[in-house]
Image (cartoon, rainbow, N blue to C red; front, side, top):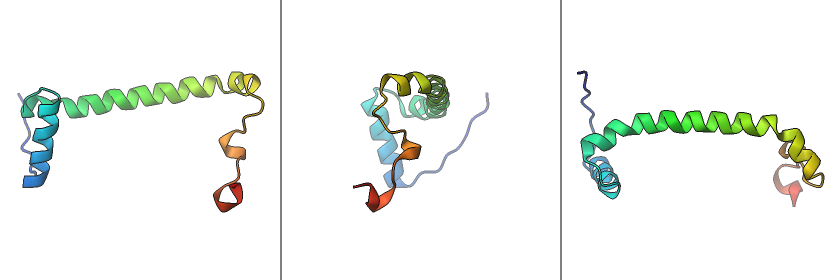
Length: 79
């Protein structure tokens, strides 16, 4: 089975160990799960953005007083 050797500073390794302990996982399991969780997070974000975009017109119709972000003023002029 393929494996990786990952180098951490002492401070980084301590932070990773603490995060693993907080989740009740071994260091090996925690580091293994990180890229898988990131892949799932990105998939969720892509779906959520897509879902929101397909319902933008419904939202605009339901809340006509809301200003879409692209129409808002930027910077100090917005106040």
